[in-house]
Length: 68
Image 1: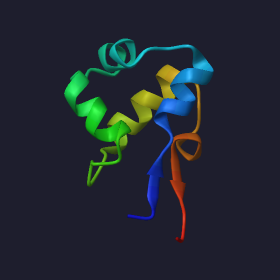
Image 2 (image 1 turned 90 degrees about the vertical axis):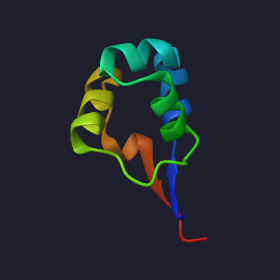
Image 3 (image 1 turned 90 degrees about the horizontal axis):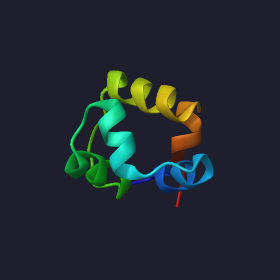
Image 4 (image 1 turned 30 degrees about the horizontal axis):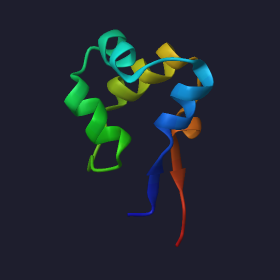
């Protein structure tokens, strides 16, 4: 899939742990892990909005399109 998830990078830049983000956003650690590893087939805009708010970032900081 040509959409890559850079959530680990943004988490490291912000000094936040995955379990902390999951709690703030209101999703399970398992679902956040699925998103981080790129195995998710979709993401709700409400979830993306909550992640961006928690990390003070833009969706483009997390999602990247690569035409491999």
